[in-house]
Length: 447
Ligand code: NAP
Image (cartoon, rainbow, N blue to C red; front, side, top):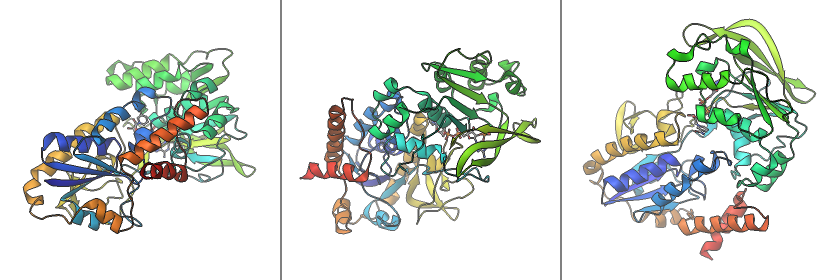
């Protein structure tokens, strides 16, 4: 038997476990997660109104319910939890699928003013992440500025523009639902530092902005025309060409009488968040122009966009895990086809997959081939790895170390508690939003 620990139960962890049991008849996989709940960003990142993508949880569930896979939630790895070295004693191999746990910084003055948040703070709040900051994100907000033009920026823009009816059908926590449903936000600016043909969002997500009830979308034609590919996008690769075509459709007057307006802005780079009183009131941008090499240069002309809420949506970033090598330049663990490299040499028994391996890019499906590559490397090392026997039963060892894992029955109890909470509120499933209620529900399973 080959005993493997996968650290992280998001898409990359689940696809790694799946690939392992599919490719090797004698492997047993423990999928460890810091949280008592599985599925990583599918549960805590995919927007609540994206039910189709959320339903991917059913595929991931099938992996975690496989007879040779075991979910062990509530197990932190690293400082204060199980050290990396200890894991190496308990398993033949460890695959780190820990994602990119923090957000990139803008590095401009005013970034930390009250009212300025990372998009991940906002996403965690409406997704009921138990570590979310319970901020008054929307109090007194009439206009919002979203910095960045990736899919996360589109998600938070759309959530700001959604109405009460659409939101109440989701599993978002009641406090977030109440705040979003009664918000006074009527204007949302989503701002890119480069042009329409260089935006990172995908066309399907972009197009959805144009389908939101009671919401207009506007693109400034003169601004978009700064992009050399904008007048004739036919030479662009298909994804960028489609984005430009959708954006061109929004250069006319926005839908008259709509309650909310989304303004997509381009060629503006943030230089400062400006205070009004004791909180953010505007973002100061410098107008940019294309530099002819895919980048932009500043023009020395500036513009302020008013916003009482600023969401910085400029990408995620991996964080170092004590005991594992880390490349601060890329925010990833150095590796060779998924094998962790220590000082340039392969470290047998240690692997990575997902965002901590390749950086925070791609959609959920991108993790499948990524995980497969890592698993192929791992199984290629199997003879070497099984040379030594790991110490005893990992769960017993975790318990002896004071860690009581939440097993699958515990997670199922959380699911039941969320269904009951939803029913009591006259809604569908509603997520439990804090550690206490999650752990109480999980413990009820063992009682
Ligand atoms: P992203 O796709 O990397 O987009 C980041 C955006 O921030 C880009 O527009 C980037 O502009 C901009 N940016 C970076 N640094 C900046 C700065 N200093 N000032 C101004 N703008 C800056 O990141 P993301 O939106 O967080 O998404 C992460 C990944 O998750 C992506 O692969 C995304 O597709 C995926 N995702 C998918 C979905 C979905 O499929 N529905 C939903 C959410 C997320 P530049 O291009 O100029 O650097």
